[in-house]
Length: 207
Image (cartoon, rainbow, N blue to C red):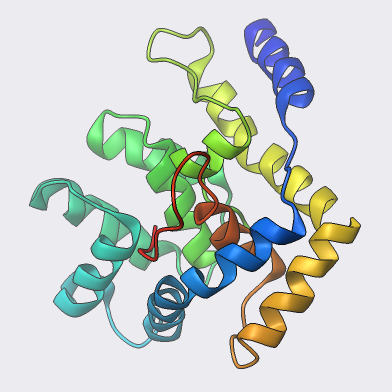
């Protein structure tokens, strides 16, 4: 756990969200397609048994870029079905996926958790790039413990940004642009961050 504590210290020094009002305004139009898909996923999450709903799986796979085989997906959607409507923590999901797949699926664990708990951020390569962060490598000491710290720390930095002038501007402009979208402020920031890519033009595709 000593290594996990050092990793936490390094994260606290490196993590900062830098979004200008111009970047927010540029990203907002590109959010539309992904937002529509996200809203559909959330609205349909509890309407069926997700283990046997090919349409939901297809839409989820497209939005969250799931490119794993049938066996992996069977484990994932069984876990999502079991956890929806319940209080769940990231470490619980990460461990369950590890037990089923023998892999630490940090990103997919966060995507499952964010589907069940919409106030939680997603661990995504583009968001991490914006924050100048990297996941612990496969040979890192205390790797699981380090990974488990990420969602809580991400949420803290999301909330810090949302409390600042540009964060409040983002929420205001998001609501003006998409007045019928009933989503959390964390998800608003997540969607905008995903569309804000250094040295790249804004891309309208989803997660």
